[in-house]
Length: 339
Length: 115
Image (cartoon, rainbow over all chains, first blue to last red; front, side, top):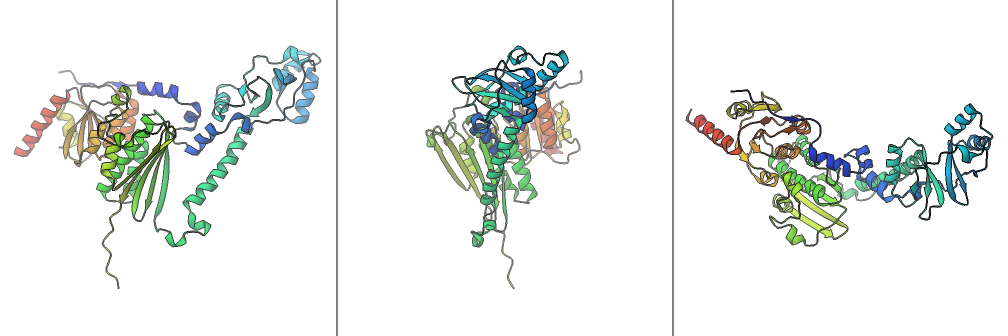
């Protein structure tokens, strides 16, 4: 008998290609492990929140030499050619170098400016700007409003500055939330053990779905928690993670451990569940064939999570969010005799 | 019955994981629906499935399975093999159908009991 040789497919699974095509570039660039906060910032912030509004421009008839002086004095590397808020082109340092090289520095900008412009709209989410910086080699993009008027200019530096500022605000908020004792409050309620970790779950990225649950299981193992308890927690984490991945617009899975309990919380950004009772019943699902082909979508996710948890809470608002919380009580070890 | 025995019984190949793993099969679960697998209560499961995806491996890790067998010679992706290696789950590919694989494992268990 000929020796059996298994078939190994090179590269990603086929379904992943579709997912990658659908996944916004910012999520790809930042990786699946990116903080939800960053992803939310990229969606919440619009180009107009970050762009520079004071734009230094030149008219079409200005010479390249005039443009060169303006670039030098203002220490910038690109100059929109604009009149009455209408954008005609951009003069970059490269155009100046070409002018010096070719000897046409006294000719008008309109003859040598870049006219094939890539522009951003003020109302676009910041994730678009990041995508543009990734896809094109330009260091800055002019920003137009809905009436095609030039209203600003955005560079990578503007994006970085805005993100760093907002991140420091968010991190401060998080620090306050996770270390209440540091703020001088709730000292009497401080538990001895406290551990919190959160994982971002990206919509439709089934190649990574389960990653958080696998990490949770490994983390609990390191803490020497009872094996059957670990398995129950891991099952709930896995089902909830898959749920966020296949049914929601994306969200986050949170692990919280203290002296008394392990909590798994799954929060997503919608679309929400209209009939929670129906959704929690065995065998009811809104999953499609693709999800079924991946081994899920039999309508067991919520009921399985409920089955393994000591306490199960769910809240949802259609169009907004779903939050599922599974609480697992940690059995108290027998108290050693005192004295 | 260790993973090396499973490979022999099912005419298979070990694609990922440690061939010298001392863990023995506690129960065989043959299922393509991962939620069903998560529901099972056995320890040291050998998971037989035709679901050749990362999710089969991740599910196996969650339930503490001792190995995964993909039957019907289903093509395996490199990502699946990587996940199996990362999570240290032995992954076996077998040319047998799910039914034939179950019958052979059953016979092998009976023989083991008689021995």
